Length: 185
Image (cartoon, rainbow, N blue to C red; front, side, top):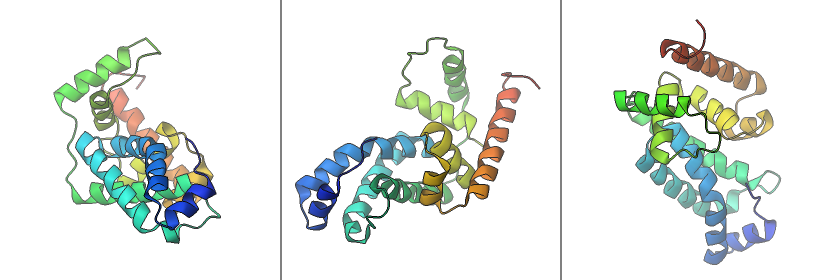
């Protein structure tokens, strides 16, 4: 994930659409990745990407330079994802999702790249019973590779809350894997 230079941010604050296009091009992948993993829906994820960058553009003057720009963008995207999770009734995994998960889980090729539809199925299966906060903390930590300090900045949760939510998410996923026949009882 490439950090956006302060010059680009300054240009965006002055209304430079070319500079903002650069921001979008450099940050849309991370926003889409987070959104897809959180929402397990390709179209919803695309909508969150659009909504995130609308908010980024509208609020560029309120961005505080003391903090990481990427973390600020993650914060906006994660809040939009949580809002969507609260509004929509979650759709649990289907039999097709579970078959795709089994195919992906059984694949021994470490070079295999997951397609969006496969990610959706895997996330639906694994995170079916997680709360919004657990799903967000798990996604940021385990799937996006962010550290506790970054997650604290994005979510507003303290380190203990992050650890607690992450523990609960991992426990739930572990139990789900055992129910599906993976791992030990």
